[in-house]
Structures are given as structure tokens and as C-alpha cells.
Length: 420
Image 1 (cartoon, rainbow, N blue to C red):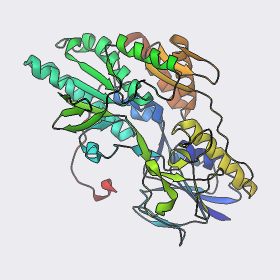
Image 2: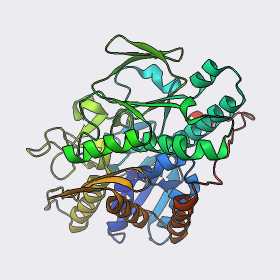
Image 3: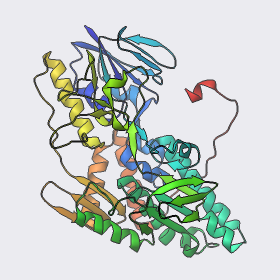
Image 4: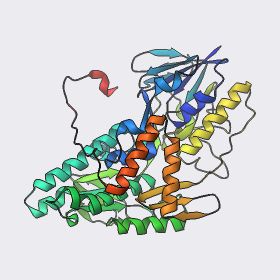
């Protein structure tokens, strides 16, 4: 029985493990977190719509139903493709086959200092931190007696007009329009300044023009200022410098502008391509390496239809995981990967969503219902599905959330391995 190491318990890794023949292979699943999470709803954590536990599910509980599958917590420190070992923060494991499904991380496009000066919603931890900062600004703004300083405290800049940026900007817009008058009587909605900047000429660049225009219209209805063809060049001392030379004060900058492959130390440079992704063939085999495969966001499969690789979204990751498992189950690579695009969706707020299906686009209430249904069914665990549904129904009628809790983490005692 061969040993397979799977790095990453996201959409790609978990679907690969689920569909692999466990009578043929012994699987070791490595992930720095002991849970699987649902990234499309991270923005709802950041906006206090859902608790982090609502969209996460313990990996050990998920894999307990499968034999010959074990979970190993750790952050990958080195991959030895010659000795066929993977070294993590805590141990070194040997493999016969390696499947890299590590996903993606924030791409700051050369401005790496932004990782310590801006907020993100790329992980559960980042989304929780962003939520705390948003609530902190609201509370401090409510106490501030200086009108100018209050407006500075309540200035939010969202960089990136993709689905994540549009959704978090829309959630902030709903807070501005509906929550502030109800829960923060000391503040006026006009005190909040929410701006979304996008470097191209349209929002939701991967979606059709009709959906982009609708998203723009919905954001304006929620009092969000949208600036297209605007690129951030620098952000220091709370001041943002844009490509047109203007410089403005923004207390809180939320970065959603791009992603890159999660770094995998030890892989040869010649198998890496732009954006930190790993070059793979049509069977998801890493070029130049034997018995090493990559799937999901971190994999870059060039084709005529996708000259820059498949979109870094859930559906390609899920489909690649299933296809690779089918090939390994047969003991031969017979099935080339063909991506079946089922469409794209994004929500801007209550009753406001856009959807692109393969042959048509629609928006508004029915798109919003479809978005909710698909995301609800995609969550792991019946308890999570039920809890999220109840939260959504309650928030739909009341805009009242018991989750607007400012939970600052304690600092001590320090743990060395927290940084691993």
C-alpha cells in the first residue's frame, strides 16, 4: 500500500481524499489548521454576520469516516523531492506520492509591507481580526467628539473589485445604511466613508458586463463610493497614494486585490510560474517531478481556453481533486482534466446579487436566493447549515446580530510555534 501525502485540507485536498480508494492508498493529510473552512463566506465573518465556527468543520471529524486516513497539523517547512519527504513544523513524513493542494495567499504585488499594515479576509484568522478592527473603529468613533477625527476613524478603503472586495464593501455599506442608525445613535451614516478601488475598468472582472454594471449599481445604493481604473501605489502612515498622484487618509485598508500560490519551500524553481503557482500538465502532474501532483488554486494548467491557468475558485479545485483521485484509483493517468464551468456568483447585500450561468446572467432577489442556497449546501456539517440558515433568516428581517462582539486576543503567554 502506497503512502500519499496531501498538503492542504481545502476544497481540492479534501475532495481528493474523499474520492481516493483507501484500500489502495494510505493518506496523510497535512494542514496548519485542524479544520476545513469555507472561504466564500469569510466576508460575513469580517462583517459580523456569522461566527467563524459556523463555516468551519473539524478535519478529524470529517476524515474519521474513512480508513487509512490520518491528519497531521503543521506548516510545511521543506519538501525533499529526491528523498521523498515533507518536513513540517513538528515532524518529517515520507511519501510515495505527493499531492500539493495548499491553496493561495494574499498577493501584494511587490508591496509586501502591506501584510503588516492592512487587513484581509483570506483566512478565518484574518477575517476575525478584520471584524475586530471594524468594530473597534465604530466604538472609538462613537466616543470621538472631534468631527474631523471621527470621520478619519470611520474611513474604510477596500482595494480590489473582485467577488471578495465587492462582498465586503457591500457588507460595510449595509452596516452604514442599516446598522449605524439602529445600534450607534452617536453616529451619523454620513460619518462613515467606504470606498472601493479597482485597477481595471469594471468590477467582477471575470463576470459579464451586465453583472459588473449591476454590482456597481447595488454598491452605490448602499452608499459605497466606487473608483474604477484606480490603482494603489503605496500605503504608509495611514495615507494611500494612488496612481493619479492623489494621497488620502484611510484609517482602515482591507486588501482583496489578488492572490498567489502558497509558498512551498523545496520545490525546484523551474516548476514554478508567475503568481507563485506550480506548473502542471493536463493530469495535474508537476512538470519535471515524478510522483508529485498539484491541484486547486496552487496549480497552473495552461490550455487554449485558459492561457493563464484556471480561475482560483472552488469549482476548479473540487473538479481537479476528483479527477486526480479517479486517475490514481485506476493506477494510470487516463483522464485529462477538463474544467466544466458551472458559472459565477457574487452578492452585494440583501436581495442584491449577480449570477453568471454558462448561457445567461441574472441579478436581484432570485440571484441572491440562488447564491444563498448554493453556499448553504456547500457547507460541511448539518449543524453548520442549520445555524447559518437561522442566522441569515434572523438578519434578513432584523439586521440585528449578536456577533458584533469585539474580542481582542490575549498576548501572553507567548508561544514560539504560533509563528510556524
